[in-house]
Image 1 (cartoon, rainbow, N blue to C red):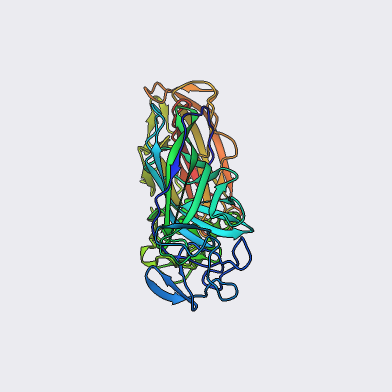
Image 2: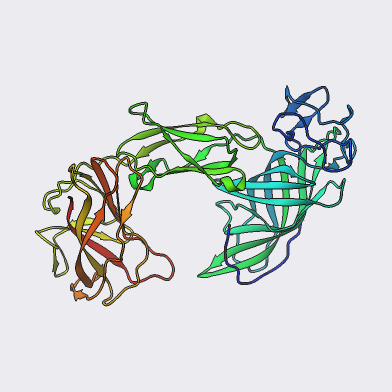
Length: 479
């Protein structure tokens, strides 16, 4: 995660608690690779129990595997290890990892006790490539081996780790680290990982980004958790689909949506974050039909070869169809979906409806969604808009407030230029005291399809904001 820092505070010490787990060889279940050290040694893999006679014990259960050996010996560079938890080199493997903050900077406005994430290692010469992630975030880095044959590793560049929802730090970057694997069973294979070092945390106070140095501890046990997907249970057609993986998943993974109403109309989602060596999320820009429901299916799994937890995959429901809008200028009772305090009005103060007797009023933080039928020759959505504000004169405006698209398509169109606030006229309304000029808007439709969805949603603002604003809408039609 990236953020701006303004001040450096405090210091960080990182110690590790270690626990037992499972190992995994260089080829995710294939033959073990050579150690990154002296000749004839074997990799002490992370994420499993690698034994002789070609068997692997995973979490206490036996499975198929091959011993990593040279000349028939299964001896780690650091020795066979012992029950007291000898240090051993690390190889391919995934770890459920906890980074715990053990020292907070006095008077710093932060409350972050710990953050959990998945940490995957794969050999890169004598070093380890690291993939770190959780809940849609995937980041990569590298750990440097101390000396040939050493079981200790450090970071050459800051290693970013994701923060938890209950941690008000925007980001944590490990800046110094001494990491090692621990063999607690005496088989020469790492059963847990741990280390010590320093980290940099960033947080926001007002509109300023601040940096603090933290003392932390890190501990990791073999990854035994199946991945799943996180996403909203209810979708707006124009929002598309974005599903976050609970941990980084293999690039061979795929996610598909199936329409539960028809049993067909499958939508294959695109995997994101491939440049970091794993997918962190899956998405589709498809504008899904109103009222449709979609079942998720997934293939592949995480970097520890654990498959998706199919039972935990959510079902996605799209916003119910509000019905076809009559395209009569809001004169009859309109079919629409409202949030917030948007409403049909006859006037705003002394400002009358734009045309006819009624217009649609949409203040910031509210939204209105409409379903419009599209005649076969129609190529645009048109409407008249009028800006309302609490202040006269030009107002700085940001963000898209209007968006439209063809159901079944993937393109969204919006207003190219901000709807003006000036020249303004008084409305004599206590809140929306000024109205800008009427503006004719046209949104071009470039995709085929018989149904159009449009959403009016002036963005709410937090922090340093312009004066409150709203839209008055009329004469909405497709032609």
